[in-house]
Length: 294
Image 1 (cartoon, rainbow, N blue to C red):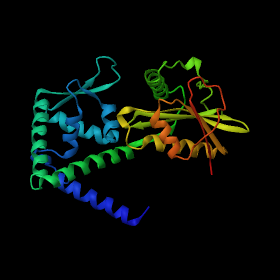
Image 2: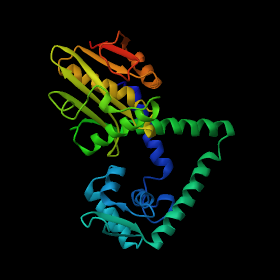
Image 3: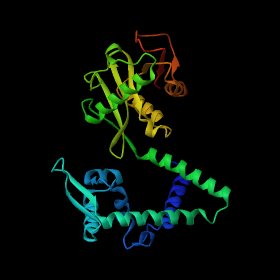
Image 4: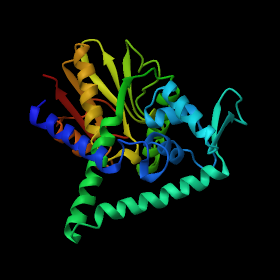
């Protein structure tokens, strides 16, 4: 990593924490630090699970517990059992908590106005556009990709979303029973591998491999949720699948795809895949690709 890039990131972090007031215990002029205010924002009107709050904010259990106890003492939240599952701890806003969250919203709008007000109109546009780009890129850094058992709930959910989207986009629909198989057993080591991408603990994408002794590895079930498209996750997933295949001794990766998946076609071509004659009888395929892994 370039030292100048690291220096710029550190400088940016210092400026942002200074400008938003994250360094004191009176965020937005209230009598509490940023961490407590953020928790209030994350608790929806219907409440939120403690576990979900930890995942959403990337905080350890002990720290979240301290924040919640402080907010309870202030009368802003109540922590109790879920009505659905008594093992689940649920956080709910009190009437005072809802009022405080509304006040935080008002103060946040005022703060945003104070950031933009000193700037000329053109500068405001540049700043907000730059912020949107930084938000997209920082979101990309929060995504984690891990090897997952195909029977895992997150893996099954991703595969189900993949099937549903193909069924929606293909002219004649998509029936996985009519397609070349990619069963759980075929995607489980040593026969294959399933990688799942998660953002704040929630699955948002997947990709799989099928290994064949002495033959090219098949790339299957590439899917990225619409909510995170445009942040480079598809390209990253493809790269991690290639790295995994290479680590297993694979020298060639193959895949087939449908003509309606224009984004996938563009991704594969830009990633060094070359179109080859059909190497299987996949009924939903219009294009077949191959890549030599260096």
